[in-house]
Length: 294
Image 1 (cartoon, helix red, strand yellow):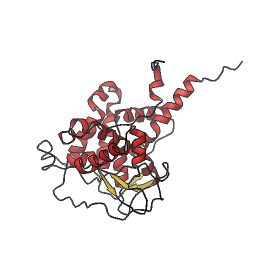
Image 2: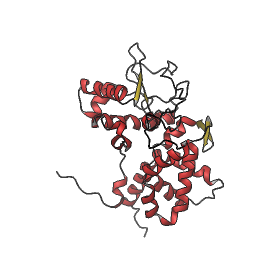
Image 3: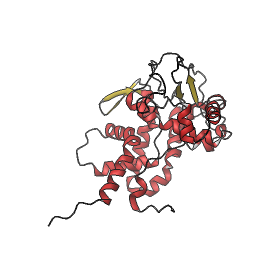
Image 4: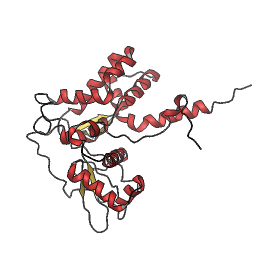
């Protein structure tokens, strides 16, 4: 039976895996196999639940559990292929780091920031390899809904230097993050599509850049103080669709907003976790209207 077309808002009712554009466009990642890039997208997707559940080690770094068996199931491949893809991401691309637990427990995986790994390497970077300072994970493969979804970002700062080439030399963190988000959002096209909302879109862009460049250890989101690395990792996942969603939320909000920056930051932070469910609820409402009363 052939697949049917999408009609109207139906296209928004599904969740999608997202693979960073940089893995296909940046020279540092072009040699990585397509399957490895897809796997990295799956690992990134796992970050949301771990961020929400606070799966952090003692240094505030997020980790996930994604077993070889799960990779085999998700990618419909054999054990050798799954192991090879993990090795490719770790040893060739430097996009993950695995920590053995022993005693039959699954490895912990630290998903590294795809931007800061190769775009930018700070001359005085003092990051260290993963230490054995992690919370205990249950024996076996673990509960998929408890542990498995995390993202790590060793978010020091965007760097210039040898690893980044000449393109980013002489630019500070603020400029580099601004360029990243502008590319990620296709910002000029976004403004062209929403000319009446240009001011608020630019305010969102500046807010995102200011937040990820913040030197604070904790950042307040909707009244809760969260580790800065967790907040930064979540904001780095945003794309143009999320900004459109936040615009919609702003326009539909009927309550008085006393602190617009805090409201925007909370809405942006939560967008990756709430956008699809919100659109799905709208589709369900549109497809199942209440019968008119007599």
